[in-house]
Length: 228
Image 1 (cartoon, rainbow, N blue to C red):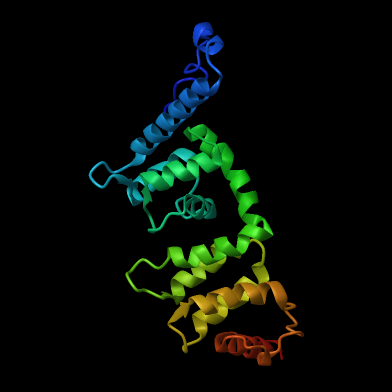
Image 2: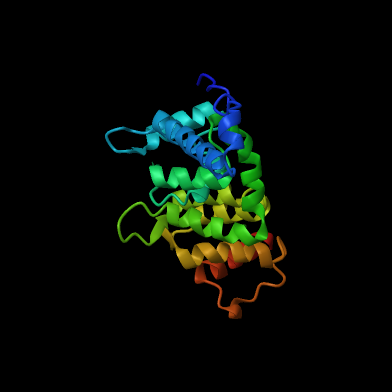
């Protein structure tokens, strides 16, 4: 997309207003202009009939940001915006999220993505992001589980960088086993716990008596059979 107008242009030196003000009016004007820019950016990608950014708009945003639609950073952006519906950003979500990121233009948003990655990777945020990723896939009303194929893609997306060996083996197992067609939230959360707590690939500290989900008992048994 074409570059937007200079960010400094909207704050011209106006000596009378600055000297006669206690500073708050200038600050409020800057905030208003900043929100106007956020809204203009929203309108660039929004479906006007829906009043929100839809999947087509997110694809256009991704193209302008130079990232793939399936890039984990887009999921991170959805998490930051607290997006409630997969593939859609409301105006309120957009305004609140971009304000927290401190950005009001496409170029600033692009520069903010690496910092967003660092924010998500903080221990205090990562588990929340991981849980959000599962909930983001619950696209139907009253849906409580996600199909195996989608779970495999999600594992690669959100855990693949940190826990590649575990994810590769777990995905392989999920694809060959026939006992489970879907994964629920408890199983999903325990996948992360398994990656963080269990030594791999020896699985020496795995104890089936520690109330792991049955699917992980089965996975460990499958792993040990492969290793033997």
